[in-house]
Amino acid sequence: MSTAPQQEIVQSSGPVSLTDRAADEIRNIIASKKLPDGFNLRVGAKGGGCSGMSYILGFDRKRDHDLEFEVSGIKVFMDKRHGLYLMGVVVDYKDGLDARGFTFDNPNATATCGCGSSFSA
Image (cartoon, rainbow, N blue to C red; front, top):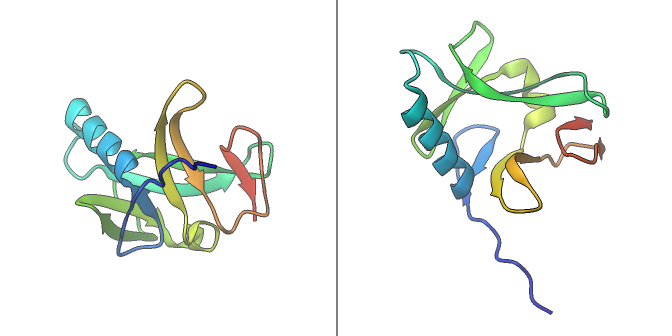
């Protein structure tokens, strides 16, 4: 029985980690989109989705309640109030026939939807 190789996780100084593949894709987006000064990666959670909460992944300026940390040279913002839901989350990037895009592996999730974009904790 063979198993697929595990993607190495890039260590971070914050509550969220990125796989090498996710970090590479985020760097590609940053380089191609020419983001304005002060815009960096934002990771978060919000109410909604079929399981109760959904993930936020995008680019934004730092806000009053944000934690700021760095993962593999990528500055990341996260509202500190979201830490309860996102502590230990690993963001990966899939580029295959069965899945494409960013995925979230959340150890705090008690339920997730079929597409993996929402969860409950």
